[in-house]
Length: 274
Length: 322
Ligand SMILES: Cc1cc2nc3c(=O)[nH]c(=O)nc-3n(C[C@H](O)[C@H](O)[C@H](O)COP(=O)(O)OP(=O)(O)OC[C@H]3O[C@@H](n4cnc5c(N)ncnc54)[C@H](O)[C@@H]3O)c2cc1C
Ligand SMILES: Nc1ncnc2c1ncn2[C@@H]1O[C@H](COP(=O)(O)O)[C@@H](O)[C@H]1O
Image 1 (cartoon, protein in one colour):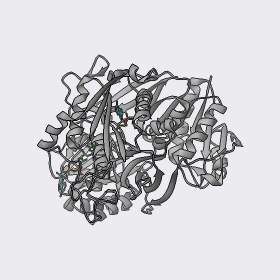
Image 2: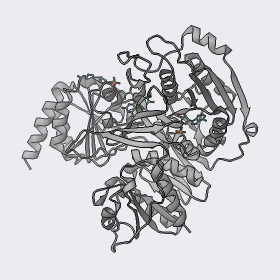
Image 3: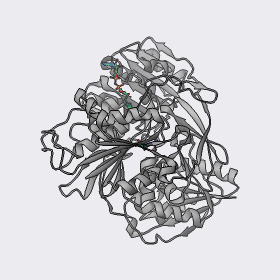
Image 4: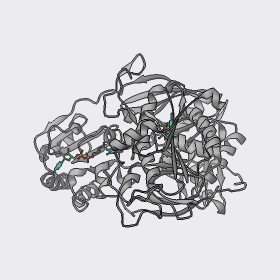
């Protein structure tokens, strides 16, 4: 079972957003792996191992790929440090990318890598687009299971049954492989991933694993391919271009009320909200 | 000149209220594109919702086929893409619900179209405004492709009002339906008489500080008193206190009710991203430094254990005095 995990770097979501000359000011930004992509890597690992013994399943391979500038190699290294086997970086300027270009690049990589499964994050938390996984599945003609909160892979590894977080609750959808999975937050809860190798009673820790020191050392020796867009024969251009960014208007200052009766009075008389 | 194909989710014999936000967006887009709004209903039983949908759009197309019993992106996307082409659409839109978000990027692949997700506004024919970075900034994007795919955000578009005359209804065939190896198995949902989070005028949300699902009962009592929907922070849904579909935030539901209560919620940016657009925000938290107080119109520094029962009693008094 070969799994391809596309990961994107994003500026640390905990830091304050600044705007300069009509775009997001990224000078000195602290870059991290998009949290959903961290969850995607964790999902790939949980599908590929016996969680209890830590042994890797026979034939399991996890390839991480990013489309980004030289610095984004760092985020690939951190995915390798947690257990991915190989990395591919396709050199590109962040500004030149949109879902169309990213999809075209991933399609080319998929042509050569022939993965059984692609696991994307549900969305990159900088652009909040939530497009690439679905667009890629559409372009490939593969089935898709988005917003996964749980996934179960049968012993034959030919399909997945996915619990999807939808507006009305949780929808269970089965997809044949090869296919595209996009993961939501709760995919990293202790029993969300089942692969018929890890014993059912086993519970993972909550959240993605941390890299061990050994993992970090090993990551330095793992292969990382660097490719250019032209090497891949990708000539498509972005269709979506950012032409300006603004900060939202600040909310007018609120007030602290002394007690419940005052709150209710203000809600009724001042805000006319009751 | 191009038309706007507006994919509309329906329930029984009517479009969902989320779809009316899409029609509101589609009207703006159609004006800029010099075309007309075509509402599209896809799925088994779609024909039953046509008459009601025709009150809102000059044209309605239904694709009603037994093979489309359950929504699947794999079967719906080719239908939407084909009808976009057949009907000379330059914009294809669907509200950014879990269906719209799942479906439309797949449609964009089939049309090789640029897409703007979760848009809050359209400022020119091919220019859209959309929140990025958990709503900490608004980005304006320009899309240069012959067809543009858009998912408008429900909370940013006032539901469309009916037009004077009913639109024309036509049917289109589903063609060959190929699920590409995908099957819908089941939906697990908790029945509730409360309004949908996306439509509710009042939302009562609880966070980690509620400590257990049992403790949410008192918030539900408040919600029912106000005809409100229930919401929650990720910490509360992750802990299993309440269902995941109650989550409000960047990666949960985006709501903008008249009145939003955040109870025992600290106010992380990811939570704020889902409720900052509310008209009046009330925060109840025992920690006076909690960031939620920075966006609240009315903040009460108190423990919910004491404040909520008191609040229920006070509101009952106000209601009784009317
Ligand atoms: C990729 C990503 C996506 C995310 N998406 C979302 C999202 O969509 N929605 C979301 O909500 N979060 C989201 N989060 C999580 C977010 O960062 C916060 O962790 C979360 O919102 C915290 O929830 P909380 O406020 O309930 O918990 P806490 O931050 O733990 O706050 C609990 C609050 O309760 C108060 N409290 C405790 N006891 C009482 C009492 N007795 N009475 C009154 N107050 C009390 C405390 O003072 C505290 O302020 C996301 C995070 C990531 C990384
Ligand atoms: N530049 C990129 N390189 C690799 N993967 C990406 C890139 N952009 C997006 N992705 C993947 O697509 C997912 C959804 O991204 P988006 O559609 O931009 O919100 C991310 O979580 C990643 O898995």
